[in-house]
Image (cartoon, rainbow, N blue to C red; front, side, top):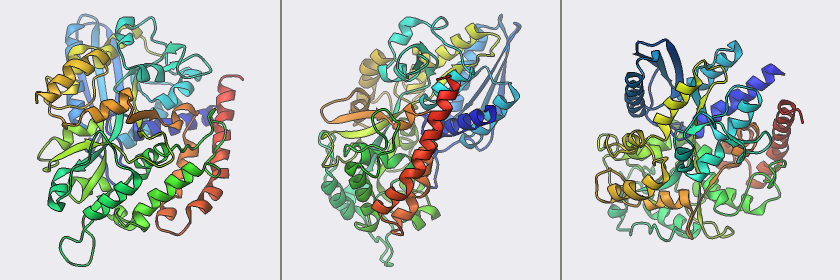
Length: 480
């Protein structure tokens, strides 16, 4: 059973590296800029206590975190002997964490995503933070990220707090304004997201053979299955699972199948996305950076890179995902987050908790990470009242480099009559194997080898088996 539990945790750790707020792995064949190898920095003090940290991060994030940790070490030099700060790649993170679990030698501080909270708590890897962190600061976090890390032994959203958030992120939709200008098209209206029909139409006008060789070399949109599919599903009122996350419903949920068909039609019928073969040759993220794609998903952590002329030398802004005909009329994107957890094995939990507060809830740290003092916005501030006031003001006056339509992101985070942000269903299941099972065969649908209806019939039982296994693991871990 222990090996099976560790395997489950490996799956959830891998999911965290895919969807978490910093440095999302672009599963379309490209990836955000990330460190090419693991690195370890040692910060020295004169005290007796040692803290070991393991996270993954992009290079620009790593630099900011290292500065904050160095500052913390100096301020607590009489207590700390060494802070070992290891930053690894996204691919390596799960491997390192699994090895640490197996050996029983967890780092003192590490990342846990909402989808992994239950399994990490149930198996005794993390400790509650309620008595270790400032309650006032916690109360000023966005409610969505506070509740995502609370667990009462049965349900997420209540009980003890087990992580402080690295961030709260979302996938908004970015568009290349220069390509709109070349095509003589009006920019998307952030107040009125496209319908599916409108979106397909504008993407067709933006899909071109620019060099006249008979091959398309500019596309309306690039969709990455792992994170670009769900906005179409949720924006059409579809879902993968029933309301209590015990049954896979994709084969009986028509809203889901309609969204899947539309998503497929963008490639096969409208021909406004790179084909599977083209996407394999060069991922959508790189095509976006190269100016070959008009629309692409934008995580909050992507903003600093997209605002850097050396990385993305094009004018761009934000808009909403297109709205399906059967949803609630709101553009819907999924929220993402990853949290700093303190190991149950940590010898200095008070110091560890204080350190993660400096990375999560400290105002000076948030000013650095959101771009007010660093000039590079890596995230929306965790501190809600600061985010809604000073941060937005400094975006609007140009102090913080950001897309002008920043309210699109706030619409997803806060909710409005036009926007809604939700956590994906993997957040509420014990692992993500059912979701991985669905993703595996999606390319066969996008190439036209299998129809949407046939694929849903074929894969639903396999997904259900994986989901049942997850429920069994959960029950075993909680002795239900």
